Each structure stands twice: as C-alpha cells, then as structure tokens.
Image 1: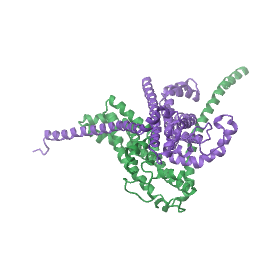
Image 2: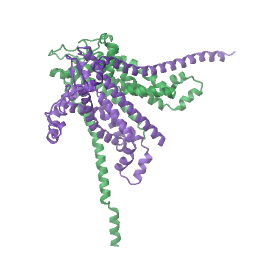
Image 3: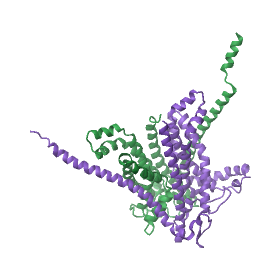
Image 4: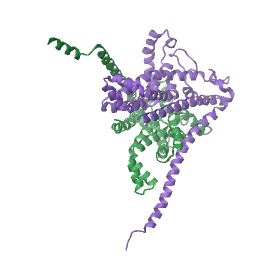
Length: 297
Length: 321
C-alpha cells in the first residue's frame, strides 16, 4: 500500500529535466514580454520628452505668429511653417493618391505576368529608396539652375508616398472577393464599370487608411524638402512656386543651433508635428490591425 | 406603345462608352505604372550624371581616399563608407534580437487586445519623424550616453579599442543607437507577419508532442522563418544605411575614421546633408553626388537582395502548403 502511494507521487513530480525545460520556457517568455515593454517604453520616453519640453512654448500666438527674426529674444511663432507644410503635403497627396491607386489597379487587375514583375520591382525599390537620394534627385532635376520652390518639395514627397499608397491599395484589392468581381462582369458590366462601381468602393476604406499613413510619413520627411524648399522667409507663403516654410526643415535648423531658445522652439514645433503624425498613424494603424485581427488567425 | 428606347440604340450607346472607358482606364493605369519604372531609371541616371565630374576626376579610387579638401580639390568617400557601415552594424546588432523577441511576443504570446495595442504602438515608433528622433538624440539621448552609458562601457570594456577614449554626446555610437530605434519596428513587423504565417498544424504538432512553447518556437517558428528573418534584417539595414537627417544631427560631423565609437564621424548620407546647401565648387557638388551614387548602388543592391529572398521564401512557403 505504502509502496504504491510512493510510486504515484514520484511519477507525478516533474523531473529535473522537465523543470529545466519549463524554466527555460519561462525565461524566453519573460524576455519576449520585456522586449515588447522596452519598445513601448522607448516610444513613451521620446513622446514624453518632446511633450515635456515643447508644451511650455505652445500658445495661440506661437501657433499662428510669424517666424522669429534670427538672434531675437522674442519667441515668435510657427504659423507659416504649419501652413507651408499643409500646402506642400497637400500637393504631394494630390499627385501621389491618384498615381498610387492607378499603379495598384494596373498591377492587380490588368497587368500580365511579364509586366507585373518589373513594375512591382520598381515600386519595391522606390519604397527602399533613401530619402536623401530623392532629395538630391529633385535638386538636380528641378531646383538646380532655378530657385527653390514648394512644388519641387511636393514632388519629392510624392515619390516617398506613391509606393506606400500603391502597396496599401494592392493589399485591399487582393481582399475584394473575386465573386464580386466576376459577378459584375457576368452581369455584363465592362471592366471600367466593374473597377469604378464595384472594386474601388469595396476597397475605399483600405485606400484611405493607406493614404493617411502615407500623409503621416510625408509630413515628417525632412530630406526631400531640405534642398528643394529649405531656405524660406519669415512670413506666410501661400505661393507654392516660391520656397515654402515647413516644419521639418525648421526643426532641423533649430536643432543644429547653439541657442537654447532655438532648442525650445524646436521642441515646441516637434510637439506640433509629432502630435499630427502620431494621431494620424495611430488611428490608421489601430483600424488596420483591428481589421486584420480576424484574417490572421 | 413602348416608351423604352430600342435595345440596339441602348447597347450601341453603352458599348461606345464602355469601349472608351475600358481603353481610358487601361491607358491611365498602364501609363502611371510605366511612369513609376521610368522614374526609378531617371533617378539613377540623374544622380550618376551629376556625379560624372567627380567620377572623371577621381575614378574608382574615390572610394579608397579619405580626403575632403575643397581648396586642394581632392575628395574621397572612405570615412563616409566606414561611418555608414559601422553605425548601421551597431543598429542591426542591437535591433535584431530585440525585434525578434517583440515579434515572438506579438505572434505567439500576446492575447488579442495586447496584439492590437502593442503592435500598433511598436509600428508607431516607426512613425516618429526622423528629425524629431534626431532632436531627441542630440538633446536627450546624447547627454545620457556621454554621462552614463559611455563611461560604463569604457570602465568594463575599455580594453577594446572601440570603447576607448573620452565619452562624447555626439558620435558614431549614438548614431547607431538612434538608427536601432528606427530599425526595430521594421524588423519586428516583418517578422511578426512571418511568424503568423507558420502553419499552425506544425506549431500545434510540436506542442502536442510535449514541447514547451519556447521549444516549439525554436524548433518550428524560428527555423522555418530563417530566410525571412534574414530578409527583414537586410531591409532594416537598408533603412539604416540611407537615413540622413537624424544621423546628421547626432553623429558630430567629422570626415575621419575613428577607432573609438565615442568619437564623431560621418556617413555618406549625413555628409550630403551637411554640405549640399553650402557647396562652393562644382567639383565639391559633384563629389557629393558621387557619395549619393554610392549610397544609391548600395541601397538598390541590399533591397534587391532582400526582395529576392522574400520572393523565394514566399514561393517555398506557398509550395509547401
């Protein structure tokens, strides 16, 4: 009786090997959780630093006023930067959205295999193109020999945005059920009616999400603007054929300055820019991850 | 009697509109796509053409020279190549293990709410504009690194050449750290997608055989995703190599080849940022384009390489299913 009981307890207790395996498993899980926590902590740290240092300067007159005269103790404002960024990114979006969607439509709906491969490759390469290369390309193609202008900056940003919008659109186009596509064609609708009446409406949400992400990326891009529209005046500029004041380049200029007041201006401008970017990208990403939640397991 | 238009009339009218609509749509989409291919070619040609002056002056020995002297008209790329390679390598060494652990957390460990929330936050890290990260790098991370991290590295690992010398708040090490923050979300999100694609029958099979979660991850998830992980690392490397603004802000601008990672240096991209606007001679401008051309070639090659791996991997995956 006692012998049987003992045998049972020994059988049920984990051996040293099993304990070690379980310990290793625990450690691995802890490392994974820790790594995720580190990444989130980095985000919080950066966001907090910017918010803490930038908030003190934010006021209505800072957000709307003209840029300060250099070396002046007056804080000045960033109104021209906000308006300029909006115009430059607006023009870039007006170029990149139709072009990006058209390319995606061609790749997913029309292209034969031998055409799809090089075009997809070009889009992938465009995604990986360093933005500084776009910057010197735009300079040598559009600025060298002319004056700096906002349109050249917009074209640079459009090159950044096109592959992002194309990829996002491709992804949603692939999700449109082929029943709908074939159904429309079977009812006698032509290709373009199917695209305009069925496929695009079905993928509108995804295209919008992708566009918001691309705008969020473009509004913070510095390099493509640095040599295209990097030297600008202190006041509001509404004409995009002239050099346009913009937030990222001014943050860069102020960050390189030795003047502590310039650093404070840079933090405050960074706070405005970052808030814009983070709100746009967080909303878009949560929408994306939420809709993907069910498709991937 | 009937108020409906004749059927032939209707179809004739519609057929014409459809014919035009179809042609127009095809023309527009094909035109945009061909324009994209042409743009890539144009960018490459334009950069190479602008580098021509420097190329004809220095030839390929530009790559081996460390000179950068506007007055004596001699330029070379070596310090920039060194700085680019070292800072990117630091970024990759730090970012890869961190990103893999995050991806495993997101794909294997986290409940749905955490998957959505943490996944979104990690991707948001990639959304921080590089100029803001650079600002943070000079004014927050730099001083902390100079006062704490670098003295610590120097105390324990000072016998290594790379951790010798005076701590400083701008230099190659700090550039590497900033780049690591940029690269982590890229590698993490690609790897998460890879891990989620691993057939769940394989994972469940391993668990059913009595493997712990870690043993399953090591034996099934990691080993079957290895080529994809390499591709993710290369794509991250591509991002690190080409980053210009944030690196220019933190690396300290010195066209030299320091052995200590604490010292300031320069990358190909950061040199372009620093000197492009204020160039004084055509040869100098052309030399900057030469640096850009080198960066373009390196960037295109790394990207092509990564695409190639990803493609083969996808084929292998779908074939295996």
